[in-house]
Amino acid sequence: MALKHEFLIIDKEYALGEDFQEEESVEISDYLLLYINDTLKWIVTCWNNSKVKPGLNYYGYSIIKGEALHNFTKIIDAWKMIFLNAPTVFSLTGNYLLEENQYKKYTLTLRS
Image (cartoon, rainbow, N blue to C red; front, side, top):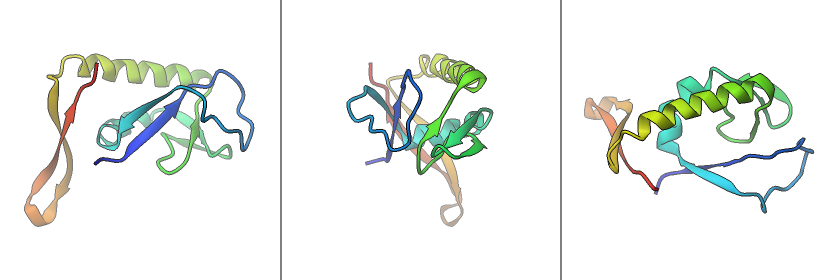
């Protein structure tokens, strides 16, 4: 089973250590996140409430505010439009596997 990333949309300022377990969340496959990762580096986020860096923090949380949030929304909407045209079951190309002399293929299934 693939790793899943959880995303929350919080309509308030984050307080360090605040728990959001009761908030509604969205899970995204690691394969899909890695596939679109280059475009996510076009936004600047706050990693773990301290460092400002491009993209999303792979091992912690990212806070997206202001213009970056606007750009993030536009990027996600664009990817959504692309994947709306995908068949229910589709594959994505992953990293090149040197030992096997081919690219890794990941099969994903769209949920409605």
